[in-house]
Length: 321
Image (cartoon, rainbow, N blue to C red; front, side, top):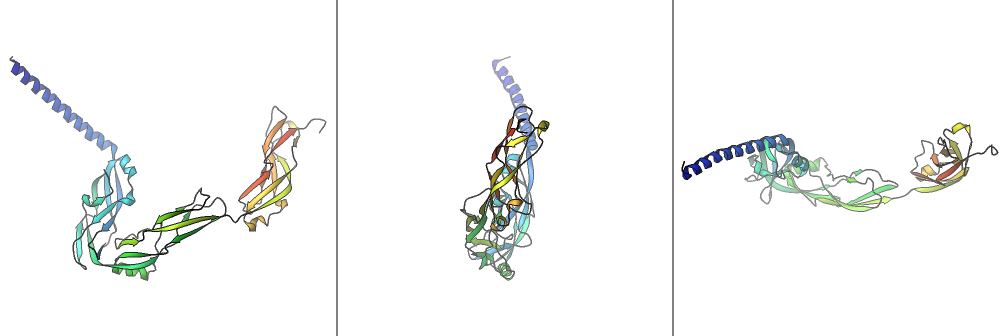
């Protein structure tokens, strides 16, 4: 066999194997990609973009259901609130324009692929833009202060709303009050300020709210009072081993109570039960025990401290018995 023939045979044979290897690699990739990818159905807001002075409202629906497919990491990282279909209908005021929802109109999906959109077509009513003024409700406070109470102030109290005239008129007639994001004070102890977004109504008839945020001042106010009770009798409780007696390093403690004035002022020394729990002891003649306090269940007290906070218990000798 000539050198040229051998080269041609080698190239043909390796080309076949190379093609087979590429085919198998592609098939494996597609199979693995199908196994690790997941789908999720997400509601997506419809945003109408029009020429200046006009506005548009999607009739009958305000969101579209979109089936997205991608890796589980991309699905979990998806921020559904940032997804938007941006519709750009063309027409004069008073026109109704049908718009087909396409994948390129979707913003915020990142690397996720669109598998399905429902509905596929919507109808947009184009009108002249109107402007109204609406009140903003006080922010909802989530959580409770660790002590005291919280006061929330915010500005502005009224904002401008731009959108479709007929719908805005109904908002005014119905006395609609705009809501903000909630504010979380859980585990906070110091006053602070922050900005909260004003929530857009669930309709495409509202195009914009100005300003779109309120400035919130959160002040923690401690109107609690302290009261000390001296010489509160200390009692011992719990299993004492082998019947032997115990002597505490003190037989009375000071109890400091913190709470609202209406509760603290009603509390009497007879209502306070201070005690230390004995623990079973096999060896040794002493043990440390924390001082605990109980008050009646109907008394709502924020905190209780004792002085001392712990005591030493000593086993009594035969002579002391």
